[in-house]
Length: 155
Image (cartoon, rainbow, N blue to C red; front, side, top):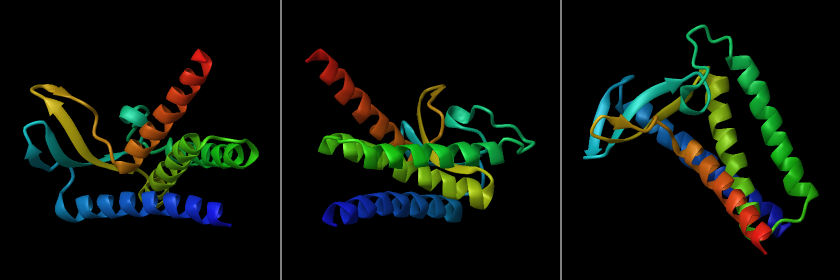
């Protein structure tokens, strides 16, 4: 029971942080407006109708429903894997990060038809595509799983 509460608490914390930060960005910024924080970091409000790095970001919006369905399936697969297999604590946290981040972005896609991105890193004229906390949690989760798998293969 404690494990289930931990899992739910972690996933809900990720979702709450993600949705709170996106709502704050929406409240403070107009679309494409930039707020400079550091010499390499701005907040800028962007609605991404596509997937990572704005791939498949078409104005028609025809990709929205397929992306919602794919995200539901991905979340279901990760929940199934979490329950079905034995994972180390770090791997489990990685999977929970992925699930929480995916749900955060899914909420946006369902309610707005696009994912809210607002964190923009850059150096001079080189820009990393805008992202959000959900994207960060997904990336960290995938990185954790990759590192643990690669370290397991070395042994």
